[in-house]
Image (cartoon, rainbow, N blue to C red; front, side):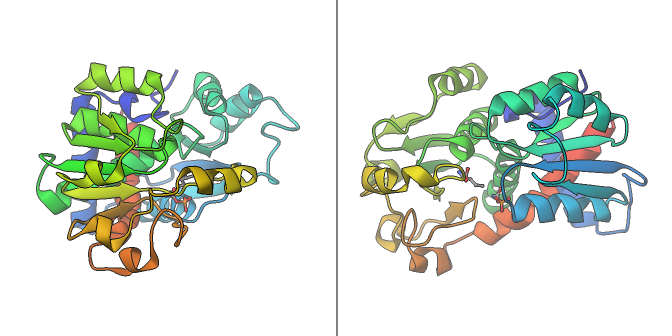
Length: 295
Ligand code: CP
Ligand code: NVA
């Protein structure tokens, strides 16, 4: 099996540092280096995307390569053809595969059968590319990872990868979720093995008390639209307002559902570092792609 990034802990701690350093170096260089000259990235999307698609596609162009967008109506994945056949066929053309799918097991199967690196571009359980960008953003902002982060909101994909990345980086993390929306036990166990489980609570105010940064994500994730009413009720009291935020920086993976997990004024305030996070998606992924090409 080729190297893959199905979740952050597919990298060792040293590899994570190398990828972030490479990302920072590429971001700073802007000198026309084209390390992925003639390389192609196949991008499989079962769900919509703004940042993931545009950052990977632009990143490949900057690195001298090319990206192919393969949307749900463009290829046979999952309907006309088993995933393992798509993985083996597409691997004969491209140098990397990035996939955004619903079921995490599908990206695992892609990774098992592909003969080129598979990068998880978001599943229902994980979003490692987002975590790479988040770590790059935190390191730029604070000069390192001696930082207390409060996660306020749903404990699914973005939160779960961040829990793993925080454990690897040595970030002190507190996760506040409503009852029943916490981080999976398996992810908590993996975090414990990597350097430390987050503190968990159901009280957002307690979570942010000692925090340097507050991070949130939507309550109604892609594919959960039929749970909307139930989730809005369950997350009552978890909205990130300017009052909860105080003068702390605000992180959000985006897209944001203003008026739900975050207020418009919090997102529009100077505390929001969400656009740096969005930009860093591309730099972090550029670092990852170049590193993967060297493995
Ligand atoms: N944060 C993120 O993955 O955004 P998109 O859904 O726009 O790709
Ligand atoms: N939790 C969100 C993240 C989007 C990047 C979702 O899955 O829709």
